[in-house]
Image (cartoon, rainbow, N blue to C red; front, side):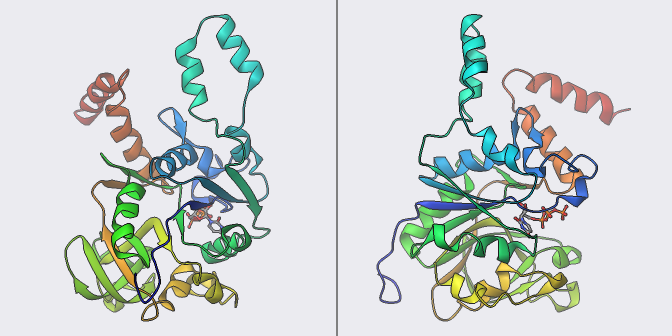
Length: 296
Ligand code: UTP
């Protein structure tokens, strides 16, 4: 029980994928940013697998124009499956099948205009209904022994309320993130008294920033209903979350793992190196290539 309410399990996750991905133009002129492959699977699949490993049962995609490829990716591909089977390529067939989702598990809604992350989440309001839910930003990839969302769900099952994954950032970078105003820092768990979206370094209440993993209570939708614009003229999820503080439990969670910002070119290249080095087939070659070009 928490704030007089029992802790409900997290069964649904929202994947906002309607952004424009302008930092990757021209690659993202037609292809969604979330389809860019990190080693052998697109960013969206990394996020879906992390959610599946955390026990999520319903996967809600907030898509937009030119994003049909994202839903296709998780569908069955009978022609290719038959061909691979006919030539005995079972290993490739198994790999392909990692992207098949069971019927009744994927739900789609659209964000007609990219008005901001808060607006994208609001578009999933009816599909989420009256229960807690996770948000996964596919361009934040977390390399961890146990998935970041699975760690969060474990923590959420103890504390309930709202939980956001957080990491320390250099002070000069606070204007890129949602930043915590800390009430009490208990190490892995941080009590929050406020949230500020993209503050200037001199105005930032801390250097603890939110990354793209959230577990929120459905009441956050009441605060998104107004479509209020925030930092950058966009409807921000951070502003709506801030309004829950004091009414519901709200914690930051320092996860174990390394987060890569795959929404930026440099972060994407770093993630490719880190994941490539760990690949069972090509990992050693990637390490050798890093040495080769590192010393050039
Ligand atoms: P970003 O802030 O990275 O924006 O969105 P973006 O438009 O995708 O990329 P840039 O900045 O133009 O390069 C973070 C996540 O939120 C989604 C994006 O698809 C991405 O997964 N998003 C963002 C939406 O779904 N709708 C929006 O209006 C904004």
